[in-house]
Image (tube, rainbow, N blue to C red; front, side):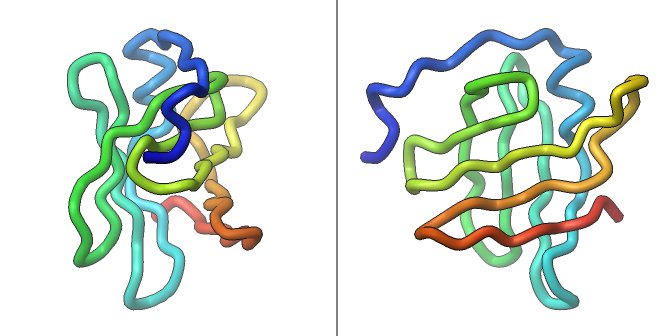
Length: 97
């Protein structure tokens, strides 16, 4: 399993809630981010849900796959406007729906 030795930080419910929503990668593929208790979960289209761990308030990682999700958070507060999925040397951007 990737990232098992990577340190995670605890975030508040408000910090996690800024990163929730549906982020559209393509017309056929989206990432749905939800807060579940004290963590963030991602459900890619037609794939199983995966728990994410916070590296920083805007960067999350998985223990299931070697990937990072980095959110674009407005400086003045409010929900993330977009995210970048970094996996296998590639970076894919997705805007909030």
